[in-house]
Amino acid sequence: MKKWIVSIILVALITIPVSCFAASGSQVFTFAGHNDVMTLDVSQMNDEMSALIMYALNEALIRNSYDQIIPGLAESYEVSEDGTVYTFHLRDAKWSDGVPVTAKDFEYSFLRTLNPETGSSQVSSFDSIVNAKGYYNGEITDASLVGVKAVDDKTFVITLSYRDPFFLTEMAEGINFYPIRQDYVEKFGMSYASSPGTFIGCGPFVLKEWVQGARIVLEKNPEYWNADRVRLERVVELIIPDENTRVGMYDLGEIDAIYSISKVQTIMHPEFGSKSGGTLQYLAFNCSEGLVMENMNLRKALSFGIDREAIVLAIASPGTIPVDRMVDPSIIVDGKSYTETYPNSTGVPPSGNTEQAKIYLQKALSELGLSRPADLPRINYVCMDSPIHKQYAEALQAGWKDDLGVNVEISILPVPQAIGALLSGKFDIFLVGQSTGVNPATIMDNFTVGNSNNYARWDNEEYSGLIAAQSVNPVLKERLLQIQQAEAIILDKVPVAPLWTPGTAYLSREYVKDLHYGRQTGSIEFIFAHIEH
Image (cartoon, rainbow, N blue to C red; front, top):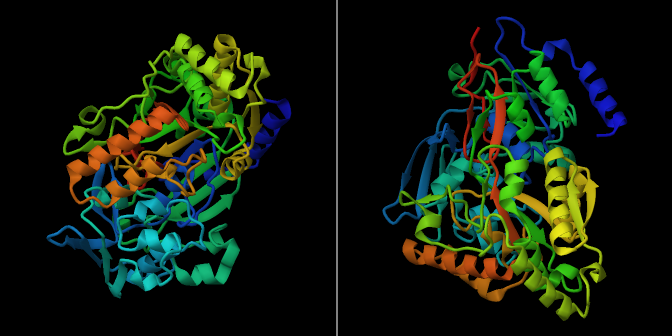
């Protein structure tokens, strides 16, 4: 890291008020993360750190807590005999300003997220709801036809097109099922949810301060329906990109926990904790017409040329597992791992296969009319400016150069700009990390024709047809077989190269009790934690 960047970080730390840190006898939890929140707009959220903070600021109908589904703002609910109608009965709950939470707040939130004008990238989570897909695709313009209805202030009904065994868990773990206050959206417009004054929630904590790139301060919400169970009075997240600075503060007793640490730091701190599963990291290859990665054999060459096992051993956090498919091994269906019951594979060994990679590379060069790997057009690997992403990029770059003679250029960009390049297609290779959800098709759904999350710009009608068919198939076994068939296609065509399901290593003081890292994205749970003095 350049000296001037370190200086800026240190200056930022010096200016943090002393009151942010835990005083003796107080219930203040201070932890350090490496990235800022991208947004607090429920309809726009799609990143880990935003999910983490929203989990504390807001409350959905139900929530995943300590790996169990528990009641949220819904005091109770019933499911119809055919499994398609969910009726939620809201408890007496209030927004942090004392205004009652109503079923209308959920209806407004869901429809706003699904409205094509909102531009949400997370609409596929709602696919099993009647007419949800048609509405966000613009095929249906009448929002009243979507299967979400506030029957009265305390009754919210969701109607599905078919029995979806994953729906309830999806709601509990999802990051886009929270209520939204319509008056706040209308009052603040484009600046909605950009600061404490323009955001309101109904969860365990309220947002008191958000200094972008520096810190987020939460305070206990006295209006929260379950406030008696919340013991922390204040939570402070310090946003510190430099890991050495984070760990140094932890060692000095200035912070109580670190959201994640690198492999190097786990050696220095053997008391670390870890969690696995819930996220897949894969390389997205930009398959747009005219770009070099449009060539399938070149994509296969690069995938076979990756020694996933060596990279994980050298760089990744404990709990990281090399994978050869798009479905997370931790996804359970009917009590069994989906990946064991429905096998698939890229055929790439964990340590790679250089000889096979060279065969694919020669095929690619022949198709492109080239004689040497050095003649390939510029390959642009866009990398987010974070230590672990840079380490991964450099390891991949070195392997491709040393084993295959393929030159890949790395463009390191600040996180917002890097994500902008991903969304606009200004890259050839990008390392993407996404929540794997609870449905085996969660990530694969992104790569259908026309999907806004199809970062690879890959169009395959057979694949898209299978994904569409499984999503409405009421017979679970048939549905899972269709997912398996679709996965076989994407693994064969390689618009993406699955790498690993990353583990997370973290540090937390022993006096921080009931802190939990779950499987789902944004999974550090501190809302029921406390400091033991």
